[in-house]
Image 1: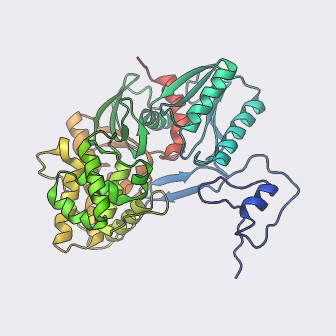
Image 2: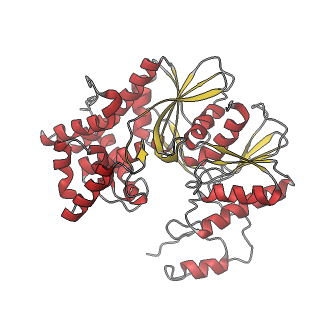
Image 3: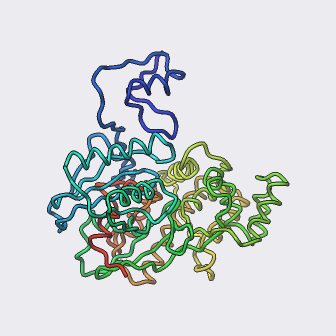
Length: 438
């Protein structure tokens, strides 16, 4: 039977919406291409939303057709300024403030290719031209290598516009604060921002962050312990490398994962870690990769988030069963501050060696992380929690948070935006307008 695709793109590339490009890029993989003489001006992906199994928590995975571009009206006290925020690099969007109305673009893809960058810039220029605006400020991520950052610098130089860099995870936090209109609150809010990667103010790779918002200021209070960020993007593609890095200095864990590497790889990678000269990371995205490598044996992934989604799926099956039990791998830990992630993996190793089923161990990992959030919130004296970052696309994590913390804490999840990097442009705008900076 034939498969009919109403839109198409190559992996990692944006939707092909021009006839000549469809013939060039898709001609070798499609038997027939049906064209139209009506040009598409602005392409739109399908929107994707999921709801968690127990609580029905809404999670937007991709905000596009039918949902965007949209605007935030006078419910926020927005200034009479013209500002452009260009977001991050993956899951790119932009936000545009004009006449006190804030427009947020649709999902525009991952700016890893020339075509994606071209479509992103085309959409930005179309929006500015459509409204006849002349932005006086441009907001961008702190990462100097992001194509969006470079695009912002090009516009600023060409038009004499002021540039402002916003830290990635602070933008995530500001996005969920802005969505729930919490900037005027008298209460302090704990931001739990977990994702795969973000450029930190100390030059390290952040991703397991706890921030405080109070009286117009955001401060980093805690992060999960740093581990060695070796081999760059290869680490994201191969969960076994995350397992190796987080397991370093623990002989039993290292013995367990040694078989995942060739003798040469093991020697080289161990020496890289021993030098201590590489970037450090607090990425929770990489931790989920490490756990999936140990529990499910997923050592390489073919697409972003594959290992974490497999781990979530495996754990959810047990969570929804009638015989679900949960164990906190961090309970009684005397080295919580320094060995959080490694201690969870130690619990994984113990249960694997004692024959516990994979799904139960995966559920224990999720539960342990929820208990970590509860423990830190209690220790730091917060009863309002705001959650953002790609890790919170995990529906099981949302259900566990609501189930275990919902009666004690006020939880703020994204409802109109995705927790992934799509919300960064909005967060940059909120941060610039409402957060005091030194």
